[in-house]
Image 1 (cartoon, rainbow, N blue to C red):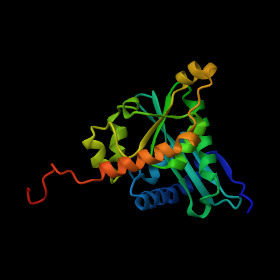
Image 2 (image 1 turned 60 degrees about the vertical axis):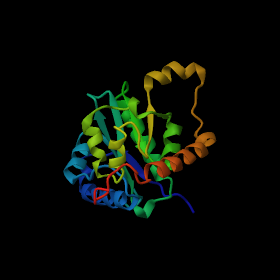
Image 3 (image 1 turned 90 degrees about the vertical axis):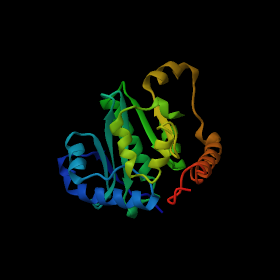
Image 4 (image 1 turned 120 degrees about the vertical axis):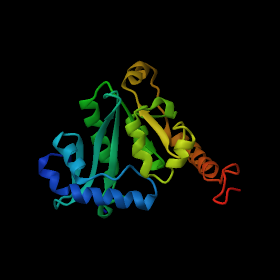
Amino acid sequence: MRKPKFNICVATADHIKYAEFICEEMAASAKARGTGIARRKPEYIEKKMLEGKAIIALSPNGEWAGFCYIETWSHGRYVANSGLIVSPLFRKSGLARDIKKKIFELSISKYPNSKIFGLTTGLAVMKINSELGYEPVTYSELTDDDDFWKGCQSCVNFEILMSKERKNCLCTAMLYDPEEKVKNKTKNKIWEFARQSKIYERLLRIKQNSFMKPNPYKPTKNGK
């Protein structure tokens, strides 16, 4: 089956009409997964479009197909590519990878000296990130901006995150550091996701088994 030829571009005021659809699909997708960023309002998505900080994908027929936007933290020292969503009509078409690459390029263009990071439980997203140059890191290497971590409040695993003092959770932290990439350019240092993905898959299962177990020291509702 031939892959549809999507129009993937920087969103503008012309795309504001899609904002409500995008928000509804983000919320539905997060609910289905049980994880995700805080629910966004159409006005927030519209603002990203007007600022030139979003990528939108349209089908050959002009239907909304996918979306992603940029957020900045710690006074611009950190950048996150957030809200990646693909319409159910166009999933499993490779569109998510294409959008990810576009928003990454836009982030590099707008914030060439910023560290780009992400949190994910999905191996598919980890693979895409690794192709772009991200590497897995500890949570301590991410932004300490409280507003960013507040965005995790809508996630079912937020209690786990806070119990670990924001130092660990089910998500894997990944970071693209432009300064480190320059330093390591001559070393040909590449994180080989394909070779190590099985390791991270096992680690994710271990995390799930460990974090989701009831805490024997935590009082029950009856105080026992």
